[in-house]
Image (cartoon, rainbow, N blue to C red; front, top):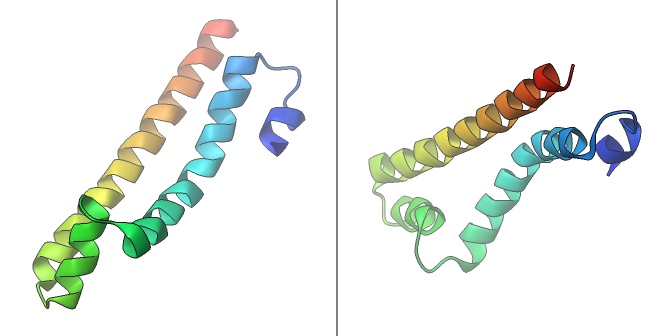
Length: 89
């Protein structure tokens, strides 16, 4: 909300991209916690179950994939934000 409010001179789409970029790492951490408590399938489930079952390489691979998703999504949002900013100038 602070990003949306702080940049009132920017267009709404640009402010939304900035806000998403700011909250994305926190959202991924929240996703990992939620997956560890309530997952029945997916990457979070694989990361948690394989760690408990002593399949550490598979667990590490799942966490690396989730980390790569975070980096890719953040990079895409930031690239889009810069692109929108350069077009609007």
